[in-house]
Amino acid sequence: MITLKENFYRLLHPKVVFLLTSKGKEGKDNVMSCAWATPASEEPPKIIVCVSKEHYTAELILESKEFAINIPTKDMVKALWICGTKSGREIDKFKEANLRKIKASKISAPLIEGCVGFIECRVTDTVDAGECYAFLSDVIEVVVDEKYFKKYIWIDGAIPMHLGGRKIVYFFSSK
Ligand SMILES: Cc1cc2nc3c(=O)[nH]c(=O)nc-3n(C[C@H](O)[C@H](O)[C@H](O)COP(=O)(O)O)c2cc1C
Image 1 (cartoon, rainbow, N blue to C red):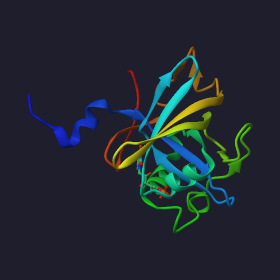
Image 2: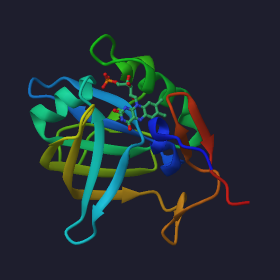
Image 3: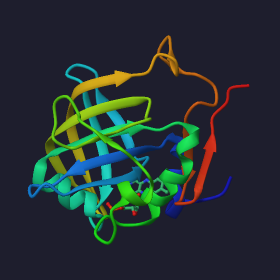
C-alpha cells in the first residue's frame, strides 16, 4: 500500500468525460471538457458537477444557473482535448474544435451535434467546494442515442473515459 493523498481523486477514475455547455446572461456560450460529475439522487433526479472557480464555464453557470452534459463519441477526442485545454475567455471553442451547436429543449445553453447523450440541468444549489464550485442540479431532460446505449449500458468502445489529470483519455472496453 502507498499513501496518495494529493491524488486521491484518481482512485475514483476512470470516469465518463463529457462536453459541458453553458450560456451566460449576455448570451455568450461556452464548452469545456469535464469528468467530475456524479448522480446525486434518483428521485428527484439530481446531478452534481464540479467546475473550477477559475474556469469561464463556472462564471457562465453562476450567471444562468443552467448547463448541459453532452456525451461525445471516441471520434471526438480532439475536440475534448481542445475544450479541456483552452479557455472560452480567450477563444471561441465551438469554432476551434469544429463543434456545431444545436438547440436544447428546455435550457438556453446549446447542445453539441454528434454527441450521443444529452442531460439538460438547472442548478438548485451552489456549494463552495474549495477550488471548485459543486453545482447540485435538477436533471430536466435526458436524451440518448440507442445505437450507442443499449439496455442502459454504453456499448463497448463507444465513448471516451478520463483516467485523471488533463491529458489522459482512453476508450472503455469490457473485452
Ligand atoms: C479530460 C478532461 C477532463 C476535465 N475535467 C474537468 C472537471 O471535471 N472539472 C473542471 O473544472 N475542469 C476539468 N477539466 C479542465 C477544463 O476543461 C479546462 O481547464 C478548460 O480549459 C476550462 O475552460 P473554460 O475556461 O472555457 O471554462 C478537464 C480537462 C480535460 C482534458
